[in-house]
Length: 205
Image 1 (cartoon, rainbow, N blue to C red):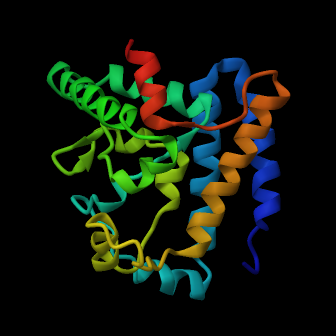
Image 2 (cartoon, rainbow, N blue to C red; image 1 turned 30 degrees about the vertical axis):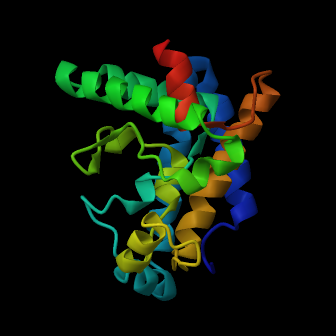
């Protein structure tokens, strides 16, 4: 990524930004890191090779195949997600809670190592789109595919499906989340990501 920060630089900058924002609360820390990652991604998109990769992205609203997997989020992202859910219209919020209960019931019947293969839809998936798209976690932002058919094949159970992800996008957002987790750990909070469905289950009970 000539002309842009290395992934290690991004992680360190995310750690610094999150640390500065933590005094304003966990959601503020998550927002600060998301802003940073978005800014770095926009800068990276000026590179011809990255621009070409982004131009080939097949992702669009309603393309929801990737929203059926385990997503690990930090405590800061969890609080941001919960705040976004509370801001939803009552009927949408009720649907999210109902879907969360269904997802929890399905996952409880499985060992953790089987969760990914279960393709359980994210409770936030509403009418084939994310109900809190503007506040979605960093791992969701990291996924950008060049082949929607491959994503659908994976969703339909093809474990051999090879999804051509945009590597720069994935690297930027995953390292940004790592920096956020590092800041949380340094502040005495659990740095380990938790499955989004688990986080919602704890919050809703």
